[in-house]
Length: 202
Image (cartoon, rainbow, N blue to C red; front, side):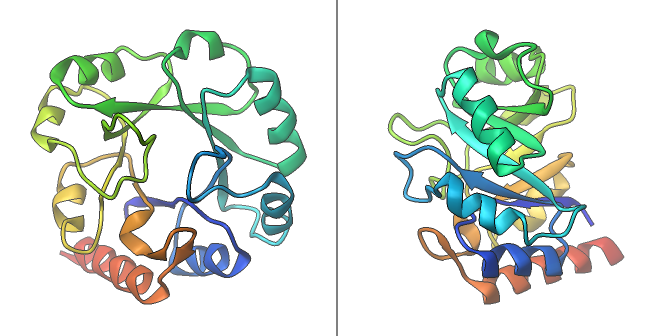
């Protein structure tokens, strides 16, 4: 089954259910401007209850490197996902692998991801939001991508087959399995993982 990250985790029930269904990773949003924000204290308490081989990812938006380092150590993160307009300022700063988000609206954005020194996550461009918009971007732009990547942005039960057919390294799902901001719908999660297992058998 393709690797799946369930992002926007704010409570232990959703995190454990994601792990139970076979998620590869769970994401915690530490950007206070997000409707899926989780405090470092809450995230730490969730993470200490999770299985050791479930990857824990912290999501940051234009945050200072020192702040990320301290929070990452405090919470216990395995990976750092960055949304920033200045990727170069984060080079060679963290011991964890960095996932760099690129908001895609044109072929130029795909080229930036292609040439990135970081592992790219491709999401929809939005002037106000940094991820979690619930909308896809033009996936035909991915024809020019020549490296592994994580696909994000509006992935749900309706388009999961097309997302997998693009052969990404992993997919990142947040709004597509939500009941409301910060709370996952376990029925939607069950259905989407079930469909992924069906695809695997074909």
